Amino acid sequence: MYNEVIDKQIASAMKNGEHLKLSVWRSIKNEFLKFKTSGTKEELTDEKEISIIKKMAQQRKDSIEQYMKAGRESLAQAEQQELDVLNSLLPKEPTEEEIDAVIKEFVDSRQTPVSIK
Image (cartoon, rainbow, N blue to C red):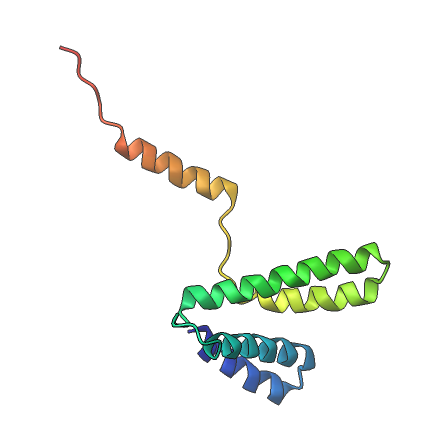
């Protein structure tokens, strides 16, 4: 699924002259291609695509941290922009409140009233 979305995003970025986005989309496409040609028997599923994108996002976060420590704000800012593009593809992570609500709902639905005879 993501592969098709990225193909469309590449075409759109090329038409609109969005060089940063084009670079990020191409790098994602390249990582997908590396995975496909790596010789593994594993298929490139949506889950694997998400895993690859998360890995790329983590690399950007690490780079941002290193650039900030070195006082290279302009490079950190460029990495942050790439990270924002990567994050736009990832599914939204649930908040703690949402997780707590689901857990509470599940626990409440599993409790059966106890009758005392």
